[in-house]
Image (cartoon, rainbow, N blue to C red; front, side):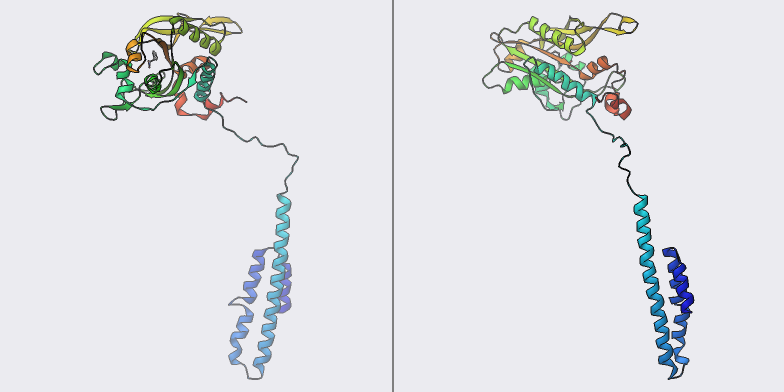
Length: 337
Ligand code: PHE
């Protein structure tokens, strides 16, 4: 029996087979257990002899199983290590990396252009008071122009800001010594709008404000012209059209000339050849006054633009919702290598 068992141990090639041998010979139903169980039927003289023999056989088999187990485990480890050997000469697999969102890149690009012209970057709250969002901008309660900016109200006096213009008033108010101000302010704004290809209930604006002695409309035109050329190319022209905003007087809308050139030549991208990109104007004297600046001493200009629109024009994005649905295939196209 012992010989037969040891042979089986020796033949076993896997831990599973070895376990089967252990159960067969040493298990509860195995022959050795049976012998030990039958001890009661033996004579007094036989008992110690048979008992010793059975225990010895059991010990030998168990030892053989243990040492075989160790050698099988070692062999398996060896095999595993061999299989998992790393070929360090293989070319690497590319690791996917993130990058700035197109909108972030555009805002930073615009910021850089204006920083280059001496503007500071400021920020203001997205949850705004009725006072700063409207009243301080010459839009008293009941003013019809409030309708142009359908709003999300939180209470009667607090709302999600509908534009970045409140930061104009906040910045001027915060200047205790009423120094000149030259700032831009990027940020999110909110309007009660139904989302479609060109509307979003939340979008981005960049506000600009320059207040000093003798700031003139020609300064506004110069700054905007430089911005348009740096952003879209030196061949671009700008054009100012009269418009209306309660917080600027006079008010304008700015178009840029719009030409798309490819290998076959150039064509205008809109029938008129011009496309509107921002609203602007000379800061209304009442707005200056409410913020503590004497309109007889100071004058200024302000503008407000939508970076989504700028990005759509610059990169031919056809739907504003692309900026917010965050389809990685869309975003990836704008990651710089
Ligand atoms: N706040 C205006 C808007 O949201 C844009 C604007 C800003 C116009 C500054 C003039 C001056 O439409």
